[in-house]
Amino acid sequence: MLNETELKIENEYKSLFHDEGAPEWAKNIEPAIPWVGKRYSHSSVKILIYGSAENLTYASGQTITKNNFRRNREVSDNSKYFKHIHITPINDGSLLTVARYVLSRLGHDKKFSENPREFIEEVSVVNLCKFSIDSKKNKDYANKLSYLKKSFSYIKKELEILDPDIIIIPSSSYKLATLKKELFVKKRIMIPIYQTNLRVINSHLNKTPVNDKVYNYSFSKEWLDKGIKGMPKYLSWLEEKMQITQVLNN
Image (tube, rainbow, N blue to C red):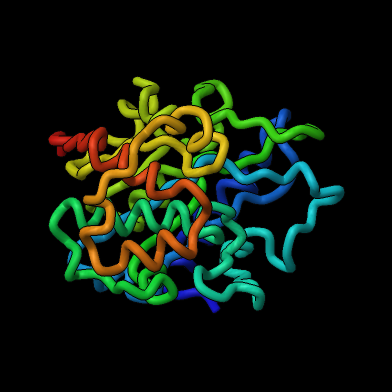
């Protein structure tokens, strides 16, 4: 069942998709609305976590779930430690762990749950890129403005409704000047990051030594043990290289 915030976003998404449809290069599938935790709206610090793009190369038709807009609300019965909500880096715990670590680094450790299944109810999560390229091979376009612009109208609406204080976003997208100029102009903290997957960890971060500081928080060890291999390296990179960009415009 959707909460009030999700219903508002769904109505906006439906209206936009009715008017604009899917881009000609994309699968003709409705974009998934954000997961908005039931305690997100009451949090003293609101964080929006952006993944990159959904991979729908496996989809042979136009139906992913009973209601495509709501597929991030289709929680899998197979989820045990991290909830499975149709977003891979949330399901495997990697992106959720990064978000929890970022909040701790920013001084908000005690404001959020150490239980991942409770923590996800305190945050909002969605993919930045709203459509999947119609291809047999998964193609990421997070750094391609001509493709990403087709998601701008959806991003604007969710930002207006969610009004986050902190946004975690793929760095390849945040480097795009047009994206920053058109979408991220309100005062908030932006945290650009690498994508959280094994390819990144095993290539870009392969030689990163594990920093003991990543275990400073009481949630860290268990979350890292339950997540994908190599996440201590990822958090170690984040510990040393995390860029905090504060947008000052109003």
